[in-house]
Image (cartoon, rainbow, N blue to C red):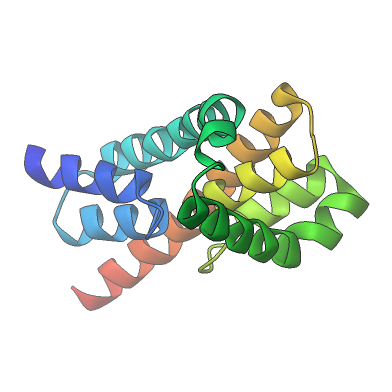
Amino acid sequence: MIADILIAALWSISPFGEAKVGIPYAIFNHVNIYVTFVVCFLANVMIFPLMTFFLDHLNHYLLKWKFYKKTAVKVARRVKLGAGSNVSKFGFWGILIFVMLPIPGTGVYAGTIASYLFRMPYKQAFWANTIGIFLSCAIVFGMTVATYHGTR
């Protein structure tokens, strides 16, 4: 049980799934649904300050390496393409909705990068990402619980 909670938390901080994978993993492995929601949500929220620290303090140094710079530019272009028009037009609400969508390519990693690229103030970006994460978790949670109870 604790191992499943830990794995769900790790999925929730992973850029390959975030809570969109962590929540279903935990629920289908019989972890308490309330523990699942809280752990996966909080793990997903932790990404924002970590990514912001990385972008503010480490990104500058890593851009000197050709491989990193090439990858960073590719990621930035993809984020701008996916979120750019919404963020530039709607600001806070654009980030919130972009992060809220429980589809691949959206989420707190992309939301944090978009807020950074569009120079959104830290507190505003934090709340847009956090509320978006909460709503995304609620959507995934509701769909997973409905599916789980439908298969039992």
